[in-house]
Length: 223
Image 1: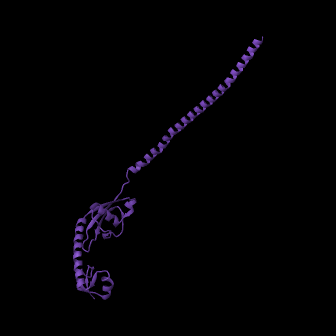
Image 2: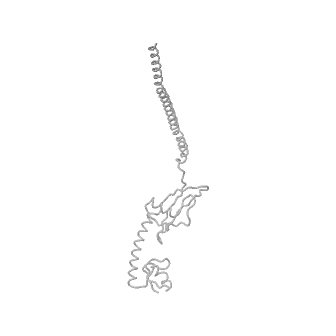
């Protein structure tokens, strides 16, 4: 089977090349994945377009590689004994830090990291942007120190705990004052009631005195 390659296939052919391949390989692998097509005017035109697109992409990748080459990024992490990280640094973390520091977007899958970084230190990593486009960057993992403010926090909390007790005093004093005022009012009301009763009894005594006076006067007149 004769096909024209639409994209580069490592160790097989480059885009635009026409090659004879096994029928099974062509039908089951190359053609379904749009890596190649049966030779025809249309396929040849498609191959040319693909070559131009790929050339443009390669230029962009070469430019990106030049910007990335030799870049250094630092990531902070908490570490324990023997500088062992509590967590790990992944290719996704490195890609995010690269974008944050340099503004360059790199696919995390392009960063060659066999396994996540789990120890403090410096590492040289390769970014495989293309077949022959492999810039190298330096990644430093340093220990993150606990902020000093966290140490002072407990003391502030203790002071804060004392405040409610101080705030309770005015409330107790207010309650005591209210109780005294209420007691005074009750005492005053009791006195007023007693005074009112005395005043009610007073007129009766006057009537008795008047009656006695009249009786005495009658006796004197009779005599």
